[in-house]
Length: 124
Length: 225
Image 1 (spheres, one colour):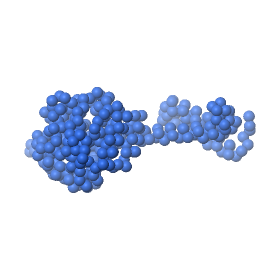
Image 2: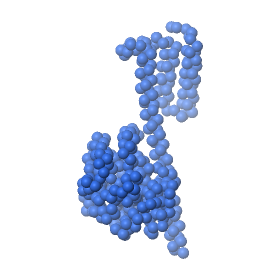
Image 3: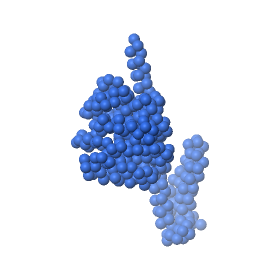
Image 4: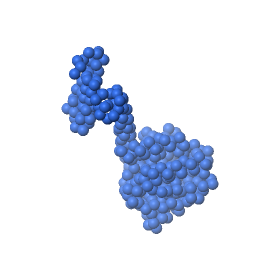
C-alpha cells in the first residue's frame, strides 16, 4: 500500500473524512434515514479508498472491463450526478406540490369565511 | 342535481366578465367558482362583481393543474354532483355545457371531454393540431389511454370522479395526468364535440408550444413521486 505522499491526496482525504463525519452527525440528528446514511457512507468511503489507494480504482476497472481506474471514477461520478439531479428534481416537485396544497387550503378557508360572513350579513 | 362550473383564471380581466355572464345565461341554476390563480391584474375584483359567482383566490400563482384541483376540492367538500371546468379566456362556448354534462346525467360516463378535434378540425391552427396530436400520443404512451383531445380544458366530472380523482401535477401537464387517473380508477370516459373560438387573445393565453419538453419531463417525474 502506498503511503500518502501527494498534498492533493491529503487535502482530498481531509475533505472526505469531513463529509463522512457530517453524514454520521446527520444520522445522529435523525435527518438522514439508515438507507440514506448507508448510501452516502458508501459513496464517500469508496472515494476515500480511491484517493488513498489509487490502484483500487484500477482493480475495479479491470474487474468491470474498463481500461483505467480514472475512467471508472468518471463513469461512476456521471451516473451518480445524474441520479442526484433526478432525486433533487423529484424533491423540488414534491415541495412545490406541498406549497400548492397550502395555497389551496388558504384559498378555500378564506372562501368559507367569506361565505359565512355574507350569510350573516344577509340575515341582518 | 348540484352542479358547479369551475373557471380557472390567471390574468383574465379582459374577457372574464363576458365569459361568466355567458355561463350564467346558459346554465343559470349552476354554481360558479372562479379560481383566481394569483393574478396580478384585477381578475378577482371582476369575478367578485358578477352576482352569485364565488371566487377562490390563490395567494400566489400555482398553475392550471393547481387551480383545477382547487375547484375539484371545493366541489368535493361541498358535495356537488357534477363539476365542469371551462377556460376563462373565452375559447369555449358555454352553450356546449349542456351537451357536455348529458352523458353524466344519463349515467353513461364519469368524465366527459369536450373534444376540439372531433368537430372543428378545420378551425384549429396547424401548430395547435400538431401539439394536440403529440400530446395524445404521449398520453397513450405513458398511460395507455386513447383520446382525441388530451389538452382540452372543457371537461365534465361526475360525483364519482370528483371524489376519487387525485391530481399531483400543478401546471399544464395536468391535462395528461388526468388520463393516468382515468386509467388507475377505471373511470368511464366519453368525448363530445365542442365549438372552439380561437382569437388572438385566447391563443396568447393558451398552452405554449414550447412547453412540450417541460411537460414531458414533469410527467416522467410524476411516475417517481
